[in-house]
Amino acid sequence: MGDYLDTIVWPVYIDSKRTRKEGRKINKKNAVSNPKLTEISRAARKLGLNPKTEDDKSYPRFWWEYSGRIIIERENISKNNILVEISQKIKILRQDK
Image (cartoon, rainbow, N blue to C red; front, side):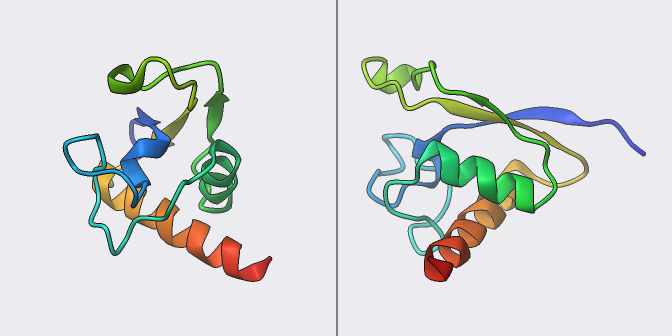
């Protein structure tokens, strides 16, 4: 086992309704609209990323919105790849409903 890095995932990072300037980190085609904290946490759990939820936090640019954030452990994979995987998993989970 290698070293794990704690990585913060804000919902805005994968929100297709947000612009890159507003904080979206992945391509619009990979992003999902209005991702919920519970969806991100569930997707991360299904991907084996051991998520920790902090729902009382605000993304600094939108300090008035308590969107919350997820802290995950990642090993030898880029943050961008993790965000895309979480987003894709959310799309699958939404289809299953």
